[in-house]
Image (cartoon, rainbow, N blue to C red):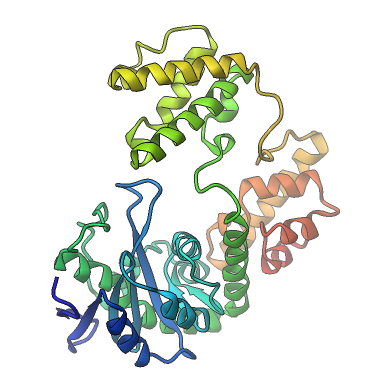
Length: 378
């Protein structure tokens, strides 16, 4: 692709905007020189999690006061970009994935984050997707045709550069609109607390493996102890195989199939009748059977890897749970918010089980913000 190619891009007004495709360090320095590190910058990233494993950070889309760029992350030195990004506020939509990928790629923590997804929720909007908000406020319909694209392709097609640039094009305007709405509703502090809580949670998660703990897989708790032990082993088998082949784990075998395999194996039945197992290559199928056998030999699973999200409640706790749930629902209705935004059922269960020390513990563990605790009277 031609270096520094300028691409026409439809904007949210009658003014045309251009986006710069940056592959070389000189081009990156030139772009960074026109940015103000003291002003917020819209940011979005694309990885290749649907195509490769472990996933890579492939491109970063940036926009500040209309200056658009898409940076190739598979080439060159990004240290100067990291330095600039560490000193300013980020505007993003759904910070979880983007921040986690950027931190793992070497980017320091930003000074502050404004997540338009969180802001829209706190404003009480029902549809809070980026495309939904762009359609609502700018009457622009964004295409979703490239959601499953392989962003590690090089040269990157111009259509993909156009596509990803639009993911940041409207973020600055969205921040302005949503900030004013939050201020008028008296929820600006809620916004700051919510973004900070998620940012801290993401930072803590960086020390954990970048794949899902088996106990957090839906269906794990329904398995008997032998089935759980088998799942732990075949999850490890799939992880190692995915790494060796460089493909996402789900392309080897789906998680729901692992649950079925674990359940059937724990009952002493053959897994060869399962369609997903039949479709595996002979050598892979054989290694799966070995992993199942190893899981059986490990004996029943005893100690939990992570704390369970739900609790068995006695009569008094059940009563407190219902009272908290009714209180939460009433507050949510009066504020025009989704009840789950104030507190999930799992959190309500924890509150009901431990009403005396729960506020401090939930806030310290980044499960709850002070504004949520205050609404619930904790």
